[in-house]
Length: 420
Ligand code: PMT
Image (cartoon, rainbow, N blue to C red; front, top):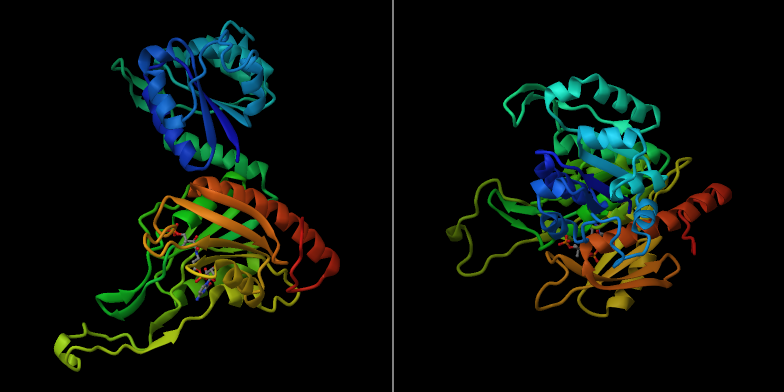
């Protein structure tokens, strides 16, 4: 997971930084907020604290957290985003003035800096501002454009803060470019739905939260991510390629349309195991049925994960295959059997609570992670799915890198490797 220090300086556009914080968080970044004194005159620190779940940093001489806060923050950040950046802040940074926390952090960091100016259109056109921005750009700062339009003072022109969505996509792009060699990850998520007739279907309680959180985490690590999802209420994360499907058959096709270009396959979807042998073209009427009983003939759906993990890739590389197991009883025994049956490199076991359905639809999950040799690698107890996804993404990246090296060396297809 990447860390971003969001620095907010005193502009009428400060309120947009709250939305920026929220959008960056949705991308899976960990965000801490630094505010200048003038920024706090526009928006309270409390609002940023409530959303970021971190204290707001505003005082160079606050020794409560750390004796050298500006150094800690400067080292913690993988990226510093200054948004909105006022003419005053731009001038101070251009001249290396370090009379507050922001000035010190910026001098002490080795992280890349992105700056989104916001000011009155006449100020933005001023030669001093233009020269200062040029200076910072020459120093390697990523200086974002501004938007043209009506300003708070009533003027119309250049100088409005870029929309939070656009700044967010610039940040995502920056990390994606930085990590262009990282793998292509294909993830399935959500339930499938199998029609019985035009208005009825068989499905399950999967919300897609686990799979979507994984997609976000891999994106934040700079991976190329394709998310193949059954019906959910969730938004496809920024920068992730989404493919919508309904049935297991459609999911199977979508997976195989992309799998030859994949490095990692993660099957987090709750694929419905059985579908109606014949789905009726018209709504089935009660009187069509024999009295009080209705017989529905079911046939097995294809096992998507197995079709990927056991596929013959010829000269192509076999992706690193991660399965999930949702078990209500004999959890470990059933999970370990799945590793073998489905030829998996990693398996994430979730124990399903028979009364509440946990972790289906819940925001938290508890998982035990096993590698391809059935060795227990990690247990994570009752944590938010986002947190589990971050840990899993880090672990999968490590295991995948070992797997890729071994596969290249051995040129052996379809084998399970224990990479520690
Ligand atoms: O979506 P959420 O509400 O966040 O809940 C997350 C989750 C509980 C759905 C998720 O963590 C999870 O466990 N997904 C897999 C659920 C499941 O179908 O488990 P299974 O034990 O029946 O299947 C084993 C594996 O085979 C899974 O990786 C599954 O995706 C895959 N499978 C199963 C059947 C099938 N026909 N094709 C498959 O690919």
